[in-house]
Length: 122
Image 1 (cartoon, helix red, strand yellow):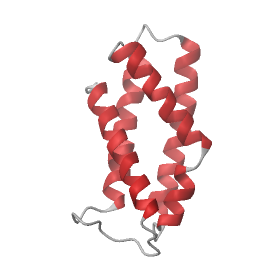
Image 2 (cartoon, helix red, strand yellow; image 1 turned 135 degrees about the vertical axis):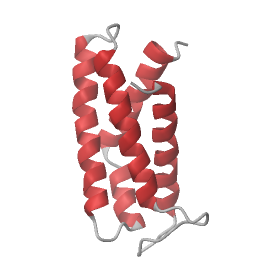
Image 3 (cartoon, one colour; image 1 turned 45 degrees about the vertical axis):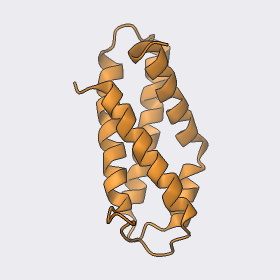
Image 4 (tube, one colour; image 1 turned 60 degrees about the horizontal axis):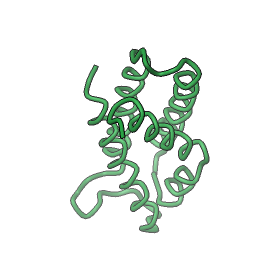
């Protein structure tokens, strides 16, 4: 199992990029100012999510109900990210619509709760 803190940082960075990408108004997919593609950040999000799922699944201190809800939310996020990656053209509008999904926000809020409660205890 890899470091859950690193996984969360990777997910945060990818989501922040997705927010910025959505605001750019791109009709055609392309590399950003640093030459980085939206697909690279989606891959980082997917990787971070897989690692975080592994941590949550193995962490005995996380209650079952919370684990179950996180796993369901993670499955949803995986579907959204797979749909984005499967698109021939990832436009800003497509990413904006994905960012606006309640399920995305639910996942991120659960991730931050798990971080502060079970990983980097406040």
